[in-house]
Length: 207
Image (tube, rainbow, N blue to C red):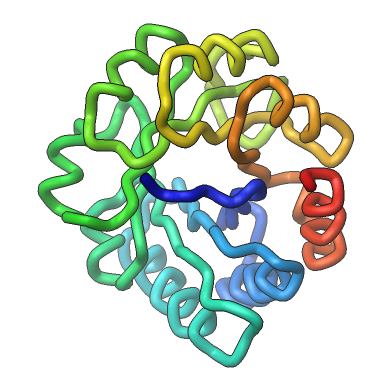
């Protein structure tokens, strides 16, 4: 079973006007101690996604405290082409076992939003499950209904796989999410400003 770090940083291309800014942001997160980063790009432009992903991979191998685990959102094919370490899929993407056939032993994460989806995902070869949105979030269009801390507790009771909570998580509420049973918190918005300092503060909160 894999070990997921307390902070699961999401690098969302929607918040950056240039690829250079996105890569610089990721480098700051790594400098702040992040060992797991997901690259998220919902634009649908596969060429741009691959270019940015390859640059993230290249820069993450540069001299640093550590080489992070890089996760591709949605696209198993780009995960392979960019030499990422894993892929994360949602309920509307390829089925987990189909993705497993593409990525092999790489990390595979699956998003869930209710108990039934958690049960189903638990029976797959997914390495970890995500549950959310825990709180209200502006980072996702057409977000699923908020599950709250009780949703995290319920998900924890239904799986022994590592559980990543996502959706509206900040330095102010992250500890309560871990206390509810999550192994890790996925964060987008609360890392955008001063990413290195923000990451370091998250790790202090999540000790």
